[in-house]
Image (cartoon, rainbow, N blue to C red; front, side):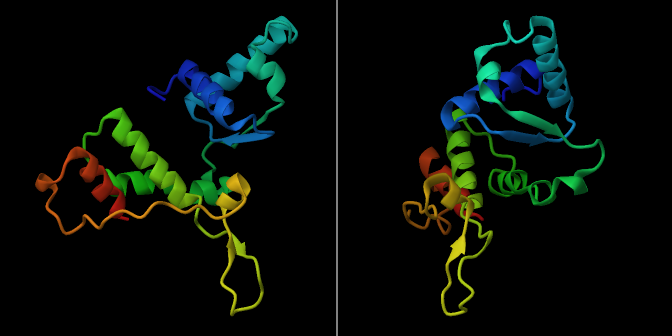
Length: 171
């Protein structure tokens, strides 16, 4: 999202759904953009009786769950870890990135989080195979292309592309 407005969130929701399909349930905190989007979507539905509701809403079947205000403990692991925010702060820091560089780093963070183990698949301690979010997305764990180790090279000797590679290796 380019900003935190209701309109930007609705545009992002449409973009996300276009690439991944509609979710049956969506959970969010009570951020003003989410509350505003919820209010606006309910207003569209009430005022139009579904006939004037944009196609993406009428067809989605998504149930939106807003968590209680000031209760992040009710949001479970996805809120407790603040994983994306943590990794982005750790990897990007105060660097100025182009939109393409930021998207690349964000995709790498997403792949990292989608590779985190959820639980063991086997009870046999000799078998180390775990269920990851990647299994739900593509049917097996996510694997990335190996890249050369750029950590020992000073940042000022790297191209912009190599700088983002080096940033992604700082995790």
